[in-house]
Length: 551
Image (cartoon, rainbow, N blue to C red; front, side):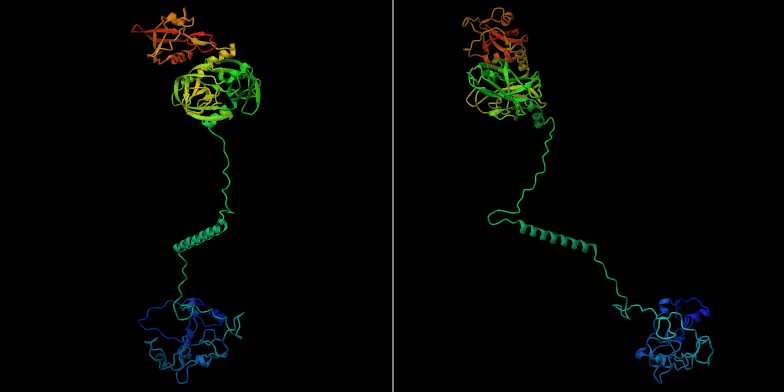
């Protein structure tokens, strides 16, 4: 019920005492100094009738049926104690009954009338024949009342809980607190640790090794998958570029025996190799060339030059293999990276990596075919592994260009040779610029021109430099008449000390330097005659020399 003012008809329809009348039919009054009470709300208006100690009620229940009288056991005071429920009764016992609750209330000595009627008016009572204090007739029972008999109003709502656990008379129970964030995190960590420990224990029990060392659950896992792409400038990229142009060469047994080596395919479908590899074929041995695609074919020797240890073979078929690019050997410096490719010991397609250890290294080597043709090479020295079978293969730079033709190796206890032996990190290759000139001669004429200046060298001389013969030997003059040296003013007995500003140590070094020059090149020679130092400029000439000879 709210506390708004209602009309009499509305109150009659509700079948209950309006809230603007004193509750329980008793006006207790207020002390003079008491604060103003707030208006009662619906919650307090519906509060059940308090019961005094001993079970005595304070007044008439809110929802007592209109046709029934109050229960004497509850509503009526004991005999002689006064009438609490009836204002006309004796209320003198009221303060004495609750001295702690109502200390300021004085005993009433006479009847107290209900508000709205004068003193001495008839008591309305509680029976069906009694009306309200205003004298109006009783209202009919409310419609759809839930019943406890005719005329009963709807039951009141359940009382609110006030005890510690919902019981009456105490404070409201505090709400339950949810676990904090720290507790949740700690719980999650504990669960994770327990789960991890349980998983580890399970894994151990499943995969533990047997007593004999075997482990049924052992595995190395699958590989991550291959990826073979490499940058073109890498060693692998260069090898992939050059390998299709490299061939393995087998020379069958002829009158001079067999040989094996390597070669590479150049413009026009020609294969370049060493003379000491191709030499047996000149004596009737058969040639077999195998390309990188494992296909083999025959071939024939186009030309060879023992003095430079170079030869050219024309294969019957190239199977569409690519031709290799040729580089410039004059651009090389010590320390440049190089790659040697060939078939050492018959192992085709072998790739080794190294650097240029030295340049202009004079090398005099003999053929491994038994012909013993002597070669004079102003060689490129490298520490890339070169072994028997690498002979004739390419030495390439980082761009995949051929800058040398592998030819000889140095072995312990022996001079540089093209014979059998193993690599000790001292390999030698013919510079590509020298090989280029010789290859062109071999392809165009079948033979190569040998560079010479027309002198005979005194091999018995032990002093500094190289001395020209003082007397004719084997019918040869010390200085060829009309030759390049004679035209430059050189004479028998002159000692050559420098060539193009570089000291000359011995006869082999001088011959290697001259052989590396092309016919028509001019060289500067410093020499001593009669204790005086002189300089002469000599133009290199070409001569057909079948085998290396002092020139």
